[in-house]
Length: 395
Ligand code: AMP
Image (cartoon, rainbow, N blue to C red; front, side, top):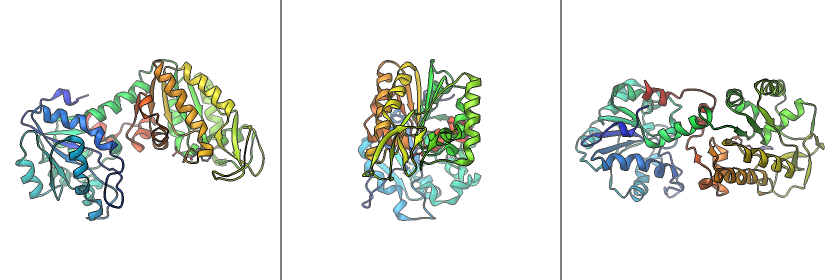
């Protein structure tokens, strides 16, 4: 696996795919700069080597050229974070980009306009990728968030750098973290899978049954498993067409020696709202008209025990409707348990969509070992797929 350390960037131009797809407010100010901050180590290492950086990214989902999606808006934030002036090419390919890239001196940075202003980017167009490739001597992919897409800048462009391509430090860290959990995890290994639906996590569950010793299943997924085993789930969310699959997963887990932990009690509500009436009830005895929206106190205790006896922990998906304060306690308790296990030496990886949002919202970001920057990319990795952006560097 080639990383930045395999190259000396002195007098070289690095063409870096970063993920600067950051949220902006109505005044085009960056409201969460995590992705820019995450790319900093790669950029600084190259500049310190005496190289220069050509940065390419997408922003949002533009239809053709739309000024509201211009990467120009985020230049002040990038300059602020990197402490270096950022030059700009108003088209990511073509003569202006080529002239500005050619004129780049060691220590300088050029940002290219939004790649997705060209539909060739998402099409993975080879000619477009070749034009991008003209802008650098070494291709560096540091965008985990788009590594599951075979786009021109994430995958196809690598073909034009057969010997001069590598992972940036963020992407390398993401790969290492997933490996640390799925391949080299110190036992016992635990995965906590929450979230809304069994259907969106099924491939993940099937893949990780071969890798873990314990599996906590929580969130809305719980009720498909409980109903399939004959429990009464009231009006809780359930995928009836996945009940056979749920039973099959329980069977497979048993055969593979994986202990599955489902909630034993839940906070049930008579309405999907913060002001609903609530009651704690046995997960198999939820009255009609009530729905389970969070893990109950006994479940939290059981999960705490499991988490604290494990040495490697993967967390994907909340244990309840954490967006509503009334139903956030199970997710917060799990975060506390994982933070505690991490403090005591466990390796913990949080990845995939809403669990990352929950971890940030409740202040656990610095209390776990690693928070992944990729939602879809993380899920596909957990499904056991080799991401095209990663394969393109390895080939
Ligand atoms: P996912 O994107 O699959 O990880 O699902 C995350 C969503 O699942 C969050 O928006 C949660 O509010 C939701 N969720 C978690 N637990 C439940 C539940 N018991 N009932 C309904 N939705 C839930």
